[in-house]
Amino acid sequence: MTANVLPDSAPPVPSLPRYDQPPRLAGSQVVLLQQTDDPASAAVLAERLSLSADALQVLVADAPQAGAALLECLAGASVGLQLLLSGDEAYLWPLHALARQAGLRPEEIHLLNQGEARRTIYCVHCTALQSGGPAEQHDCQQCGVRLEVRRHFSHRLGAYLGVCADADHPYAEGRP
Image (cartoon, one colour):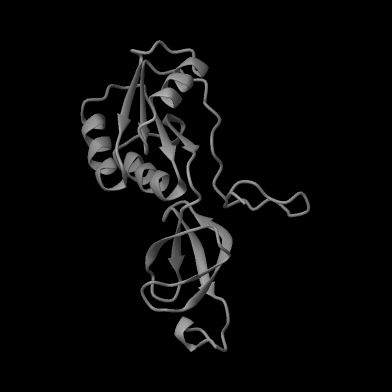
């Protein structure tokens, strides 16, 4: 299950992230920063946005280099830049925070959630941020507590809240 798709019977959770369909862009400069090198998806996106191929600047950077690539791009940007970020949640949210710190407004940043279901989990017990999959339970890599990953998403941290799954046996190594 992806983060923004809930069962029909579940009430909506206001904190869950919402992801854009390719937006209607009003800016003169459009930059796509994507996690994987897929020229076909960039071309399809440019077509869906009614942009010429040269109007869309495409940057490809994996997670370790993405922040530097984004800051370099923003250093030369003009007013009206529209930023499209494409990747999984663990890739999108640190870049979103970096773009906000650099001065972009929320309406100038568009998140396109694609790829595998990696997400960032915040352990409330030791404050560690860690990468995890879509499973509902996860062992904290820092303190070893067995975490239940809640459906609460912190936009500030870019992470899902992980709390102790079993107060009687909190540490993963203590389970039978």
